[in-house]
Length: 109
Image 1 (cartoon, one colour):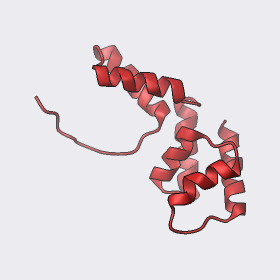
Image 2 (cartoon, one colour):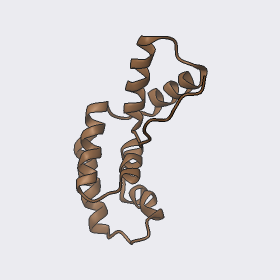
Image 3 (spheres, one colour):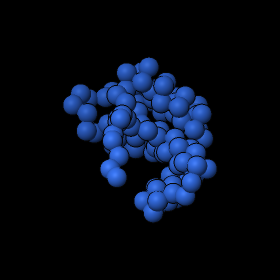
Image 4 (cartoon, helix red, strand yellow):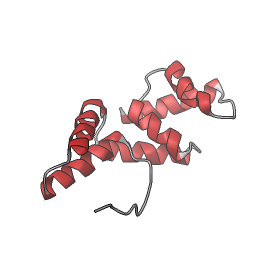
């Protein structure tokens, strides 16, 4: 029986991991869910509370939800990595802005 999509949103890897852990308590995960859980477990770099707090903080700084989610998932360690994430943006990001964002990210590391 097909499932209906009720809501679509970007979520961080720590949140994906948490959601799949909750689903696992209700019953066995499908093959795709197990693969996704393994991926989220391997690549989550912070816990879900810190991830949510960082996501909120980045959005307060004017970062779009999609980019903020990617930043939380990747947790860049340098301005160069952060610049790569922003390369798809239509507006240029100043180095001072990148430094500020990097310092915010480091507070949650």
